[in-house]
Length: 452
Image 1 (tube, rainbow, N blue to C red):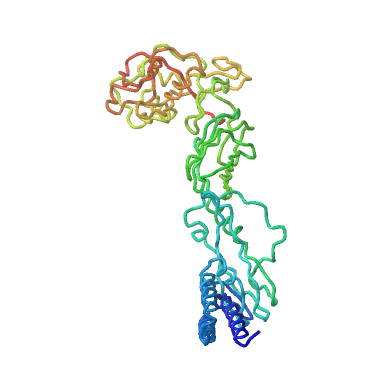
Image 2 (image 1 turned 60 degrees about the vertical axis):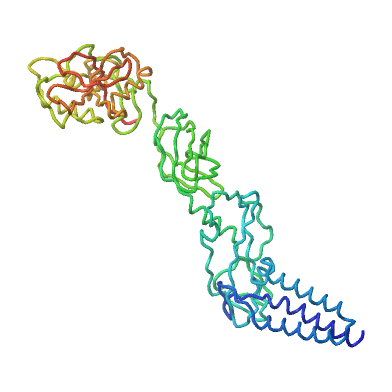
């Protein structure tokens, strides 16, 4: 090889070495190590410039080496492009090279497919400093760093690496040449899972036979894959958006259960979120027929037949007042009406009829000795403003309850617009609710509350 060729080869060697050392990044170690921001190496860049200058001088001494100069310039261009390459920079950034310690970033590189996130590349850190280093601190990526646009498009995890390097940990010693890994995929998935919440379910109770439609609300629910009730899978799971999922409850034993929702990002649990009721509307129970299972004051048993076909509300010309104007609590209304009207001058009236009604566990009225006696009946509440009132619930379930006529039934709710003369009633033919004179004679179906 001629001296000129040897000079060119030497320059190429220097260029090759410098083009890679120029792309070195830093991460904090020393006798100890941490994680932070990359810092470029100005000395390596200076050596790269010097190498180009020397090579250019050698080549320009002879015209015959103009082609070689072009090759050198091309190599320089390639080296520069490699320096800008994120892949190469990521590889170099993961190398501890300073025996006194340095700080490197934990790179977050999602693996995507058709707009979905399949996972994240692991961050492997290699000790190439020639010295034993100790990791003194690790600052993990945040949810915003992992998912700047949200985690709704995160797919379930794939197969794990069968032979991963040891995990990086604070206090861990890395001998020269040793490698440790920050499992970015697990970190980001844990952050996504922590962002999945289940806050409410509506309705929160239903029959043990299942089949009730429910709406679950929370955060991070987009892509939900399953809903279960104490391990029993729901059916017809429909993801509405990132905060709403609908489902149909499966059959389950009576009692309160946990509701669990699964998403690619993770799962969330609503503890004691749903109550399976022991019975269903239309079944015989507690001296009558189960009429309503809407929770609280709307868990009702209705008498098996009308308690009267024609009786007045009572007390026309007398206002009971606020004590009888609840649209949801017929028991409280009934107690106030009876306390206010007494025997109503000897004229029977609806609230008193229900207060006096009793039936035993064998269907006898009045109750017979030795049988369970049910004597806590009242006139149901409701008006045309609150369609979820007790009387409205009876109308909605009239076919299952049975025995209703196509006529008007009294509510225990006094009409606040004219409490002296009027109270609410409901048409069990068309369902309309109207304020009627307290002296009118209408039908009555008494109810009692119960706990399913």
